[in-house]
Length: 269
Length: 269
Image (cartoon, each protein chain N blue to C red):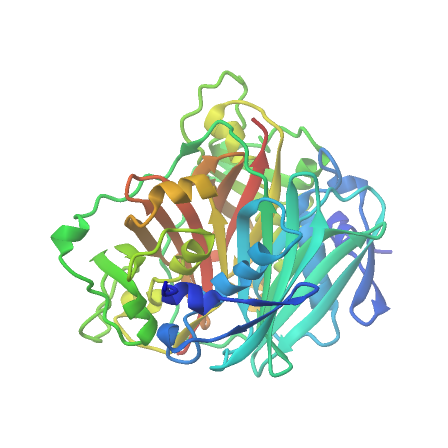
């Protein structure tokens, strides 16, 4: 008997035909309200990956969180809006109780060998062993599904308004270990806690509105990473009128840039 | 008699009812093949802004270029997938000759006063007057619709493979002058020429696959900028297997971060 990894259980979909899939939230990835947004993004991507008409592998994914997903079942709809010779354009939606809770788009493509270079180098960081153990405060359940070792820009322990920068660097991997794939990489693009907490040292309600992930690695490169550590870095560029952005990067331990990601986040006050 | 600005003519839409709008390409913004992608993005956004059900102002826009738009008429479809108390989620599509040529999503929201700060400062640059005149080589027609003064990272003049970085900084404004609004800001997010040309000093075919724009300014702030200069900065983070990304920022001359933007771009070889 094999036991399914909790991440696979969380993003599992049952095909209903014609690009429709049934899914359900799991307590293992619970957030403050509804599930961890990274898992919801991964679930939307999974519908594309499970679709019988799929061409190639993910290059780009954008998810827009339209409403809080309630605990329970939902339906994912994935439609290939355009199929070219080597690229394919997807439109996705998650529906729950008759309402749209997520809109999304993705681009998949057949990858080929070309001139390649990583321009942005991974930051220098103490090793995971040097950090010693998971150190991201688990205020919500999903944080326990990752081994996150923050090396710079931890969640403030004193909410005293003293923040002056929003950069965090960290190590991350699934807990327990799970071989990296597109869905888990998409989810890990969202493991950085709200930058506004760090920049202001003030804990205000915040929630991602839209997230985009660009995949710079193909399945062969992800397989090479396997269950290894990933290096992450995130920072905000602007906070204004109730929204801020986050730009982030995820590298393999060997220093290959696997994904770059951006999000815009609502915050209160 | 008043003459319409060529940008307004390029993004003009005729309502057809039920979220459908008729548009057409214009020679003024012609690219190598079809129109300048920035104008196509602005046109998709314009359908949202013209929609009678619109709530608030743009916060986020993602466009996916599914196929080359041919010169001629097209139809834009905009649908409010979810309307909340203060945010609204849009799904858009551009259709031409029965096929999908662009998929897109947007988030609009009612902005409110909050704690605000620009974390990423604008780069120091010589003034537009010091640069003297437009200096982006106009290999295609749309470039003449802007006054672009590159201050770092110009298009290489020798295609000798000598590149070693992908960062450009520049001044930009509409030519002739036009007061800034969300549509023109969305278009200007795409004025940076392909980073792969700079990084490799090699001119290869390249085209944007997906672009996201986060708007950090509301209409009041855009009105304050008016016809003033914008500062732009762009660089790539990774090039691999036929795709690279670009992260870019657009500030007002006064140094306010108006928009942050990202794109993933196809390149050949």
